[in-house]
Image 1 (tube, helix red, strand yellow):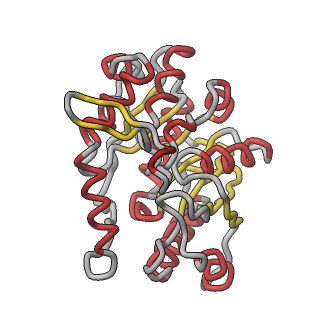
Image 2 (cartoon, one colour; image 1 turned 120 degrees about the vertical axis):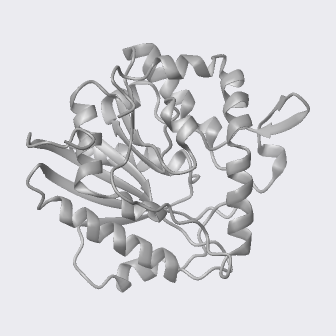
Length: 289
């Protein structure tokens, strides 16, 4: 039995939230290819003997507000609507909300309204992690007390393994999520107008408060007790990063984001008045596994 994957059958009603965009000056073709891979892998889950998703809907959410640092080039939605080579059970939404908090809240609220019990938030760069064994492990954790469960992705082992899940690949039980207010809008994608952004000093470093899920995780732990499940992925999934031959700006920003992860976690925890040890203490017994 790998990662808890066994012959017990799980039936859940899951929505998938897929954030997708191509920056200005970058072709939407790579995004289209990655989204197609997500659709293909998600479709295959319905035919797995152990993981039977009662129903699912993939909501592709595309940030288009040019006032934010991360937004689409304006072409992706049209290409997705006409460029996929097979039938998919999906909806496409463009949104003025930000990439990190706003559009995820919007999409998951729609899925709750449509009867979903859980939402799986993923980035299109992580399609190869969508396997029956990985999804079974996430669902099993949620069926056994987790309010949130997330894959421990390469390069993020320290943070995710200690409970700091990331919406790059994480599943959330929707009613508990919105009971604690969803994803905090103070963690939104930064504005181009830097005067609108929030910072906190950590030592001598001015750190942006953005892009982390830990305020929501902390609130879930406070309300429900230990309920966070970091999941060790099975197989050889690959988290695809920007291609240096096609997107040098994306490569630079990705590297800067990863370098700042540790200090941003400290800054955000201090800003909200908790310690990262509280997040680790909120991991569901028996996890990570």
